[in-house]
Every structure is written in C-alpha cells, then in structure tokens.
Length: 541
Image (cartoon, rainbow, N blue to C red; front, side, top):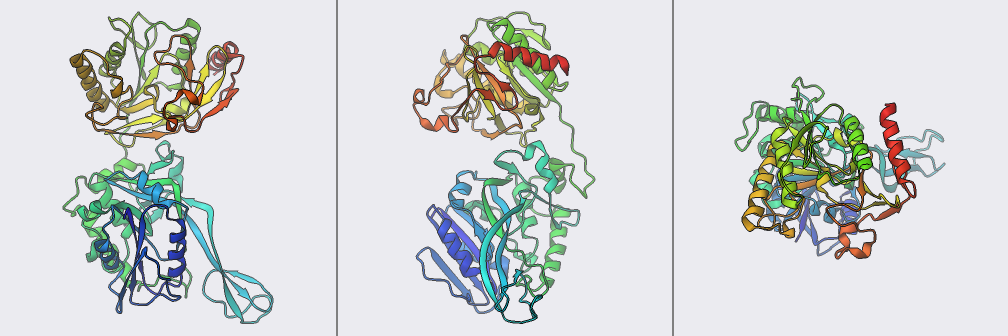
C-alpha cells in the first residue's frame, strides 16, 4: 500500500460516515485501519477490501490504538485521522506527493457541519450538539438527526502553535507573515486530528509516547518530535480535512477528561526540560525559529538581507537603468553588491575580468556572494523588474534553495506578457553560506570537466547529485505581486512563447498570455511607455 489511514475510535457515532467519506476520496493505493477501542461501530462499517478493523472489548487508549494500527501497516506512509472527519478529493495523493522523508504534513483544516436536529412537528432546525429536549418554536420534543456532512470554509485554520504551558492554540495572525505564503508553509504546531508522515519516520520518532496516557497533547508531541529531531512540520494548503468539534455538555470527547491533565503534565516535563533523548535542538530553538510567538518572550534574531546583482553589460541602456532604479527602490535599504564585466555605478561594484560565458556568470555570482555581508541573499539579474514584495520573504530553512514562481515574462518588442510556473536563478533566495558552498562546487565541476554540461542545470537544487551539484532541496513561494522577466535580443537563454516549444508539457503549467501584468499595468504594444511609467513611479515615491 501507498498509505495506511489510521482511525482510532471510541464510541464514535460518525465512524462509519468518516470511513465512507475517506473511501470516496482516496485516489492512491490507500487502505484504512480502524481500531474500535472498547465499542463496536454503530452504525456498522460496511465490508470493503481496503478496510482492516481491530476490536478491543476494553479501551486501550487513543495513543495505544494509533500505535497498534501503525504496527499493522506495511505502507510507505501513514496518516492519523479522527473518526469524525471529512476529507478533500485526492487528499492522499496530494499529501504524499509533497511529503519529504523528514516532514510531517497536515492539510488545512475546516470545521465540519455534520448534522442538524430537525423538529418533526414544525421543521425547525438546531445546529449540531446534544439532542434538544424541547423545540424552541413549538415546544414539542420529537427530533430526528439530519446528516449534513458539509465542510465550513470559514474559518480556515492553517497554522497552530502552543503557549508556555504547551496548550494548543490557533495562530490566525501567522498567515500574514511572508513565510506563511505559498501552498506549502511551515507551522509551529498542529491539532492532533490529522497528520501524515513516512511510516519508517514515525517509528524513528518512537511512535506516540504512551507514557502520556490515553490521549491529549498529541499535536504538541508530533510537532515537537518533528521539529526537534531536525525535520519540518508543513501545512499543505492544496488538501483539506473538516473536523467535527464537540465542545458542548453532552456532546464532548469520548475519552475521560482526566486523561488530558496527565498528558499535559507529562508533556511539560518532557519538552520544557528538554528530556527527549532524540532531540537535535532544544525547545527554545523552535520558539526562536517562529518568534515572535505570543506568550513566549524569546526574541528572534534579526537576519540581514542582501542582493547579488550580476550583469554582462550588454543590455540595452534604457532597460538596464530602469531595472537598477526599480531595484534600488524595492530592496528597502538592503545591501546591493553588483558584479559586472565593465565598471558600474550601482551598489558595491565588483568588476570581474572575463569574457561573457556561463562559467563567467557562475564566477560573478560567487564573487558577489563572498563580498556581501548579509545572512540571506536574493539573486537579481540585470533584465528583471523586482517588486518590493519579493524581498519580504524569509527562507524558513538554511539548507534549502527557494524560488519565487510569481514571475511574468514580457517581450520587449511587442509587450506581450506570459506567465507559467518555473524556477529561475533570477528569483533564487537562500542563506549565504549555502549559496557559497554550492557555487564553489559548481565552478570546480565545470572547470574540471572543461565545459558546462547543460544537464546540471542553471538552478541550484533542481537536480540531485550526481547529475546536479549537491543534494539540497528546493521549494517555491509566491510573492504578493509578480516580478517581470524582460525578454530581449541579448538574453543568455532562449525565449519560448508557445507551449509547443517545450519538449515536456509539465514545464509550462499555468500557461497564461496577457496584455498586462498584475500589479504593474498594461505592457502590450507599449513596452517603452511602460518602462517610463515604472521609472516615474520610482521618482514619485
């Protein structure tokens, strides 16, 4: 199997409905392992070859039940799911496709509107909860349950955290931070209702620690184990699950509440005192990573940003000056190191002695990296217009190359604008030390082989070793507004304006032709005027 979906269930009235919904929406070779923890399903679960059911006449607890189901699994991935949830179509394929080995993935979360109580006398409806004793309109007491099973997209919960007592908290304000943008975004913690990881990774983390007791603190445990072991906890916004929340008297959690208090005490002792033996980082590291975090007093180190701008000095003068003016405005005071083949009055200029070539470009980039003093580096090319929102990004990890895929190409002759998703060196952002390491190896390899092999690619991280330079990963993000790649007659790489020019159609996904660029304005048949408008905006500001 690709995936085993683990559902621990105790006295769960919607277990059968949850299983039915999961079966309707799986697309991969996925199975469901249900642990009936102290009670048989009522209503019963229909037979299906994808379902394995374990029954305990006496409850063993939610953690033990999840571990038992995981031991039965032989799949590559496991996903824990509460027994009162709805999932999105193809959730399994989406979550697995994006899950690296040391990641834990959570889909975005909605609330589930599972049912209403309907008065059989006057048809008045009461939102899900304990069964009403009397109708508020006709005073009758004849109610029947009407199954709705509908996700409520407001609120949408993508990000969670825990406070100083390690209590679960939603973190709605975090979604406004630059590092929270994009389909895949890091989250500090999670609700324990739904998460996915590699099965072997789960056991490397020792599964769920049953010393916590029956249940409680599962989200905090999974989050801390994932992050402090050196992994990452990621919200995948391309898939969702809807969760039924039972918070009213008579409509609460099926496990006894005292179990939560025991779990909280154990959790605080384990994580606040840094007692987990497999941790590579202390808990303070995690708080600093996401700082500022409400309730915590740990400050985040302010990281300096810088720009490495490189040019062969062969660009049309009007375009080059417009780009430099726009860039000076957009970087918001960050250090600019320009590396050129001829002297240039732009930033801290380094004149590189060499002829125009791919190897020369690599050496120019390295020279700029070594001269720049910033922690985080943005690559900028001489024929790109960069929006200020591009520079608000902060790379979440020091071992990953990040590409802004919100970029449009504009033909300098016709003004035709084109968008498709692609990773380009001109939109690369990463930590300086990682980039220096990569470009030193890249230059060494090209010089050793005596030529540039196009199979290694221009973009760091897009090919693994031995084809590529190293095994560091890449991720994409989308800035609030796009950048503009100006296509002209002296580009180092060829321009492609039709999908037929791509040998593999997967490289032109999102293909969109337009007369204008979002956030920038009309470009078609007026590119010189457009450039002057860009300069005018810079002068006015």
